[in-house]
Length: 198
Image (tube, rainbow, N blue to C red; front, side, top):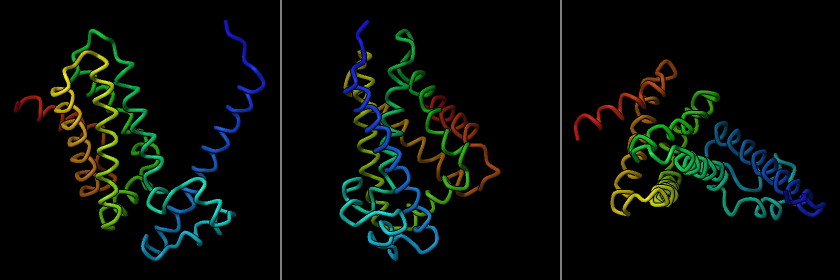
């Protein structure tokens, strides 16, 4: 069993501290966006509210938009890891469907924030464009996870794109209906619709 060095422990602590700071900045920015609007909030205001200099802000996020999507990029990696963790004998669509449950966690545990985030993205043109970039990144991660399970590239692309489209439909329907809707039930319903109509 390999031993853990002091350097490994230090690097692990640094990575956790960096992630904690990124999360704090993102949550501070999100609160300001909800209060003032995305376009009306400046990087300087976010940095000041988070207790940072403008320069320090850019060590954690390359842009204001990235405070919204940075943590969602991490969720895409969790989704791909969930696909990889499914049993090898499972059909790819079944594995993908089961793995998509990780996307529901923020919706179920931070319902108000998740709805506010979706509204913010829908109401802000620059964020809608960045949302497409996020989808492309998630698609790439899913395709990689599926091809690692010996799924042919074309099929992996179709499956990944379909799963992400389903998640978009779930988000839109959830936002339209409101917090009384059940995201997990919606997800199952949409997956079932696509499965039975193809």
